[in-house]
Image 1 (cartoon, rainbow, N blue to C red):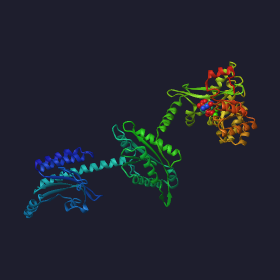
Image 2 (cartoon, rainbow, N blue to C red):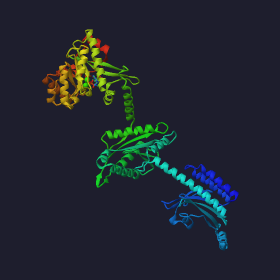
Image 3 (tube, helix red, strand yellow):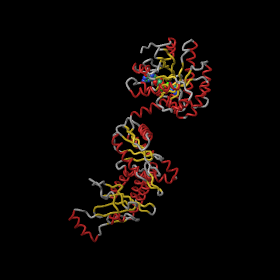
Image 4 (cartoon, rainbow, N blue to C red):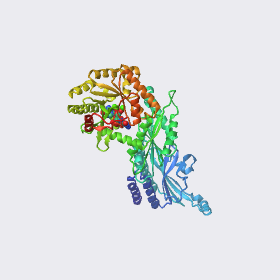
Amino acid sequence: MPESLDLVVTSVATRLMGATAATAVDVSQGVLAELVEYFGVDVSFLRRNDHTLHASVLVAEWPVRPGIPDPDPLAIVYFQDADPVFALAEHQKEPVVFRPEPSTDDYQRTINEGRQIPATSMACVPLLSGEVTSGVLGFVKFGDRDWTEAELNALKAIASLLAQVQARVDAEEQLRYLAEHDDLTGLYNRRALLSHLDARLAEGQPGPVSALFFDLDRLKAINDYLGHTAGDWFIRVLAERLRRGAEGPHLIARLGGDEFVVVPTTPMDADAAEALAHRLQSVLRERVSIDGEMLTRTVSIGVALGVPGRDSTSDLLRRADQAVLTAKGSGGNQVAVFTDDMSMKNEFRNDIELHLQTVIENGALLLHYLPEVDMRTGEIVACEALVRWQHPTRGLLAPDAFIGVAESINMAGELGRWVMRTACAEFAAWRSRGVGTDAVMRINVSPVQLVTDGFVETVAGTMAEFDLARGSVCLEITESVVVQDIETTRITLAGLKAAGVQVAIDDFGTGYSALSQLKSLPVDTLKIDRSFVRELGSDPGDLAIVRAIIALAEAFGLELVAEGVETEAAALTLLRHGCHRAQGFLLSRPIAGAAMESLLAKGRIPVQF
Ligand code: C2E
Ligand code: CA
Ligand code: CA
């Protein structure tokens, strides 16, 4: 090979060495430009064969045609309807040179003069990957050009270099495909979803970016009863439905299991995303036939939005997740759109859970006391211990904000023991100073505490430790718990009674306890739920219920306490119908221990009803 040809092959080899999938087209174009220059031709092109499409696909050309029409007729040429030169490229193994035949010189010249199209000559060199023709490298010269054996050999060498690059690019794309797609469905996988969202949520990108989370309801049943093959098939069918039903530029991913995500690739607001979710929901709900069985599965969908530059991918996914949970929580087969309210609840809960673990060691819990008054005299007959949490950042928290969380992380027992000990200790201290000796301390008990082994012994032990007399402590149990497991409750309550502990049924009227059961339980007091007392004096329906409860208490010989007395009208109505004991903001708010002690020392609060 002449030295200069050697040089050009070496130069091409050097250029191609660093080519990757991302740069291959540009690098190839540079190579073509160099070759056009070197061989003194007018046009060159590189095409690859797509043997599945049965077509020749343009990779690069030089010079780039000005004003390429759209669609470009040269971009994809199907072998079937291609002219002979293109058709040849499908299986060509050796270089082919086309030249204006000397015998037709005159003819060509005539055409050229007549139509202003020069006669062309052409060299086509196949790219070979083993036995397969993977593409073609072509050179066009307007007019005649001869190609020497040495030149064609150099082109063969270059074509083989280009074929190698192409194989490398294909392998790289294949790897990327595998890395970004889910095996089972061919949808994108989690990794692809994350990198897509990262790019979409970058500062300055158009927003909002919406994401739809799909979670199949009860897929597990299909796996369990029909086997995993059926379950897999079911998932594939649904993936295909999503793909077809989503119509529009959307990225669709499977996160594994039965979770899918659809991200519209253009900005979409909450209303449009919700509408899309509803549409896809009905597509997915259609029946699927598996082994002759017609199955349907509903799907829960959570919709969330992210604002580029403000929200991160994990923010968006967390919200979508939360929305799905909400959708599932309300019975499944629902679409839920993430709201700020959910976000606050979620953050709040996480924060509470985090801090609650150490709340007892840190001494952040305290008790307030709500006096219970005989409204005829103003005498303070009892006080109820109500737990509070001095939270590091959120201030003084009421129990409703954290008792539920404590129960869900199995801390209710520990918290309950703390309340019990603290209330008893403080009460004993007051009594040792001669205060509140006739009053009762009421302590709220969580449902979980009640069924804990050794509960009765713990209570009895605490009373003994602080030397509290029989009948001076009363535990409050909510009515709904009493009804749930009546047999266990009966045993526990009997144990408490034997230990000299009183029992009150809290929130009475809300839990539908059967009267016959109530009669058989060793209970001392009923506390009429606040909801019936609040509008007493104005709501005749409430009055009817309260009168029934009063009659019931009298019939069974139970003490009666009205909760939540806020108005004089309520107080007067209660007194008129024979309910004397009450607590409520009209009488007193919950107060700190020291204030409760001085109130008990006075013995009464002024009343005049
Ligand atoms: P509860 O046992 O029904 O306690 C009475 C609740 O009603 C208290 O709220 C009290 O502040 C409030 N209240 C009393 N009078 C009025 C009134 O006139 N108007 C209004 N609007 N509210 C009134 P708190 O302290 O927030 O306690 C809420 C619930 O948390 C309690 O309801 C009880 O079920 C639970 N709880 C409180 N302390 C403990 C505890 O130490 N252990 C357990 N397991 N639960 C507790
Ligand atoms: Ca209570
Ligand atoms: Ca209550």
